[in-house]
Amino acid sequence: MKLHLFESLPQAFATIPPREIGSLLPGPSLFFLEGERTPPLFVSILLHGNETTGLLALQHLLKETEGTFPRSIILFVGNIRAAQAGVRKMDHEPDYNRIWSGGQSEEEQLASEVLRHVAEHTPLACIDMHNNTGKNPHYACVNTLDRPTVNLARRFSPTIVYFTEPHEVISIACSRIAPSVTLECGIAGEFSGTMHACDYLKSCLFSNQEQLFSHPEGKHDDVFHTVAKITLPDNARPGFGNRCDDADICFRSDFDLLNFTRVAAGTVLGTAQTQAGILNVSNNLNKDVTEEYFQIRNGEIRTTRHFIPAMFTMDRTVIHQDCLGYIMEPYPIHEEKPCIGSKRELRC
Ligand SMILES: [Zn+2]
Image 1 (cartoon, helix red, strand yellow):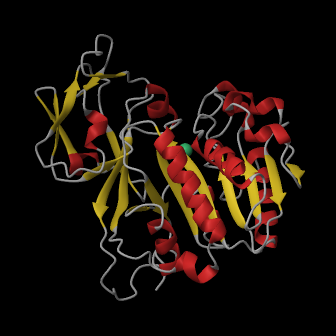
Image 2 (cartoon, rainbow, N blue to C red):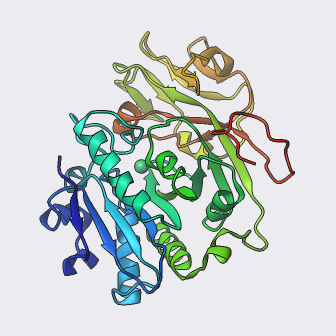
Image 3 (cartoon, protein in one colour):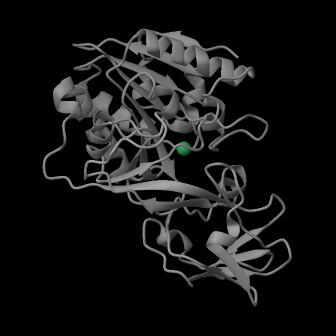
């Protein structure tokens, strides 16, 4: 698999619909775009083919700046084939945001080549742009808790998610190069997400280093830590609300509205309709912790403790390609904490 390198964007990049990007780019592409100052900002988009806000935000930015940049940008455009097909990933290919921790597959080799180029140019910061399929606030994810990284995230949203698993994501690899964030910009294609992401990119490009990493004034923070992931067995068919006729497990119709709310112990999430209708919860050490969070009694799936969900989705493809959602706990970081935890987990 070849990584295509360019020093400028094709003119049609500014207007091309996401589903047609394959007519412009032959495959995964890395652009070195010169701006008025350096170091560059590293931006990655379309690692998931149907998460189009990154591309749309860049197109908006190109219109506003008439193609000139106040700061250089290194831009990685990831899964062209999946973007063309309008899907997160192609069926027989790996997820392009799970290939960044080394390895010998051709996609992992390509990812390593991208990282070598990025590291060589010592970027100021790294920004990976994504969308959710369920209803979530716009939020930024971080993988380290050093102040520059947290402040970079705060500039996007007061809601911040700290995660260390899955560890194969680009933002964790980039966090070893520069402060690195993942932007979750709501549902793909929503105008508010495009504008929010565009404004964020613009402010990063116009800021100097000191401004970029300082605490944005007046912003409180709400930091959450993902502690577990919920999946369904491969053969389990999920349904939602009144669309449960052929479902093994039927979730409530407002399932994704629970994201970022405090769900109390004893809350009913849905019903198990067949033997296959079970949830699996695994923690960050990949240990099965299902019983710590859920019990099924008389067919009802109830929470056994309170927690905060994120990325709960009603998209069956995403549920099977990735997961049903994540479980989070509040993670207050505004008080000074002693340096505990492994170095990778907590930098002080
Ligand atoms: Zn994504």
